[in-house]
Length: 187
Length: 264
Image (cartoon, rainbow over all chains, first blue to last red; front, top):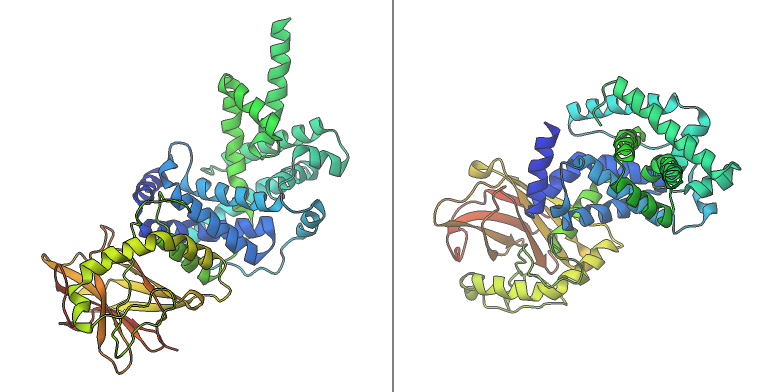
């Protein structure tokens, strides 16, 4: 179902229909902004990165291949990568400061109640999967994915061998995959 | 001996798959692993499996609603640089710019970029010519405008267009970038006009007559976006009527079926 919807929207995007871009944003703009804000910790910069990412996708829509991944992954990956690109241009000191959890963010109000419910359920399951990880494995994953640190930087930061960091990352993703699969989460 | 080395290499690569998916490898390692995976079904399978977990990571973040202006910014920027054309591209824009016509006695639009002075009587009959001129003028202007839009200090103001009667299902937005003296009109849900008919866009200033901006036909999704050069005055109404094609009418022949006023 999602594949068919993605194919249709992907084709409309590739054909250059502005309304398709609006629909893409309406579907995934909030998630994209949330990810950018999580990575960057700066609402203004998050806006810039999301705009930049959507325009990049708009201009390269003909490269989207629904068989290789969903539109959601396509959008989120673009936003995450651009956020990290920006972040990697900053000093490590700034990045550590940015890791302060975002406590005071307003909760979103999705325009589609059903979609919001589904996303909330998925979020709950993924958070459970992360919570189940040993702290050092979760730390390795989050420092890499959301803060943009390389495995060498993480190893240096927490004073362990690089091979240990790689091992923790693999174990973490293996456990997460098992947990998500066990809950039937279609990612 | 060679098999032992291959085994060691495979083990080392396999251990790096998770770091690869988390974008935590340096460029050299990334290239090595990419080459290895090409010929290693076992590592490809592992990558596919672990990628499911990585796809879940962004869903875990706190859900935060973006500001309304972000959608407008993206749509406005997309409207001036259509797909397939990068910042230095030469392709003709797919989105057509319709320069607002002016009259000597009552300048409708004030602009310091493209100031037009055109007898009102010519405004409607010259619609096709105006469109062509608009496209040519836009080719070099879109890059400048996009940069301006992205770095605008003053947030755009958005006004709604609402449909009635035969266009009750249609809607639209007028996004005014005061910094740039530019407005972008985006319309959705437009029914296809009747045979031999076209839609005509009008700007109506308070206490003044309607001035035609141009004619158009929506795409197959019922959408259309135009860029208006020049400052729209507060209180102006943007309106759409259905008129005889191909050139439209001198004055509206019906009540606007889609319209909105730029309230101050």
